[in-house]
Each structure stands twice: as C-alpha cells, then as structure tokens.
Length: 135
Image (cartoon, helix red, strand yellow):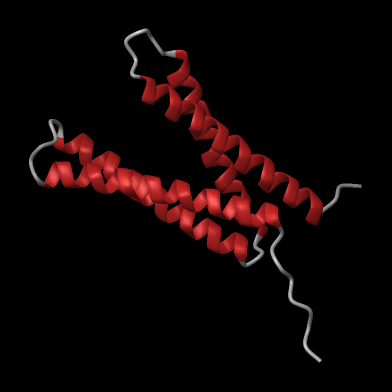
C-alpha cells in the first residue's frame, strides 16, 4: 500500500505562484539592464551591470526558495520573508518620496509590490503556523 500524497494547500500554491511572478519580474529587469549595458545604451555601465546581475541573482534565489518550499523544507521561509521585508521597505520608501511630478505607474507599481510582499509573508507564515503550531 502506498503512502498518502501530501497535496499542497491553496495558500502554498498562491505563495509559490507569487514568488515565481516576482522571480520572473526580477529576471526581466536584470536582463533588460544587462541588454542596455551590452548594447551601449546604458549611461552608467558599471551600475547597470551591478543592478542587472543582482536582480538575476535574487531571481535565481527566489526560484531556488520556491523549489525548497515545494520540497517541504521550512528553512527556505527565512530568506523569502527577508526579501519580502526588503521589498516592502523599498516600496514604502518610494511611496514616501512621491511628488506631483511622479508618474502614476511608479505609484501603482510601488503599491503592487507592497501588496504582493504582504500577501506572500502572510501566506508563508500562516502556512508555517499551521504545520508547526506553537504550544
């Protein structure tokens, strides 16, 4: 007789999907920065290389974290939550610096990033609480 299959919960699926969306966005941004540098269109090639490489590395880390979470490794929660807190802090800083001249798309993206970070943290932490109840 085979062991019962542990199916992922809807919270897990939502968190994994959101993390993969973030990883895709970071990979796209990193790739775009590197293309600008390599084609000579970037004004500051060293900065573009650093930002592009960092975005690609974080994207790879998020994909690795999703794989670890799917495998049931609880240790992957810490780096993911840390990244979400950094993303939320950055979005908060962007929203705090909004002026009347700021394009509306910047405000929308900052709110979206803040909401996505909060959603992922809430989903991951409630799932961890469900698996490992305290007391």
